[in-house]
Image (tube, rainbow over all chains, first blue to last red; front, side, top):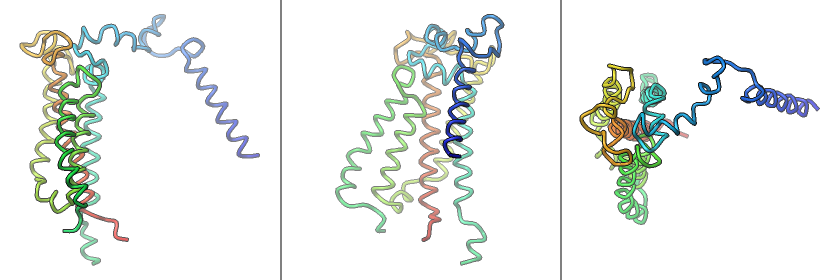
Length: 100
Length: 148
């Protein structure tokens, strides 16, 4: 009974989120005033202007390296930090040498 | 050593590692034209390195793997990425100045030498991802921390 109620509550929350996030019925937020749709949903803009503004015919690369360049920079930082952390955690510790 | 695999695996790895490397290099260098890019191509080439590690064992890998070289390669990739992003600083960070007014890499869209800094950035990111993933795998293999 408890489990069913939990699942129903989760389903209800999902439905509320779907309605709120939908562009036709949901709340409007972000930049742009009456043209908010143009600023929030930029996919058609990338498809139309990507080749002209960035030059690559692979639109995903255009977005990843130009429009969303900061995201790629952060991803590179995350990769570097992950490897530095892995090496720092895995390499022999002083405590290991003492114990054995 | 004893940590390497059998003859069949080693022969197959010898045949397929160059092909995987070539395919990864193709993904990286055509990242601005066809699906793929620096990260995917770098991961593919790192897959060749991991296949080498698994097939030939850690002893052989330790002989070929130079820690300082891979460290320098990863740093070079990251710094090249940042430096190319800095090129467009006259307008904005990450502005593709090579494509709009650059002396090279500004050919017809769809050709190999087009798209401004995208091919150079793909190379830098591919180098970084390859060096990073191979280093992570070697670190996991070198410091075996799972002793029963």
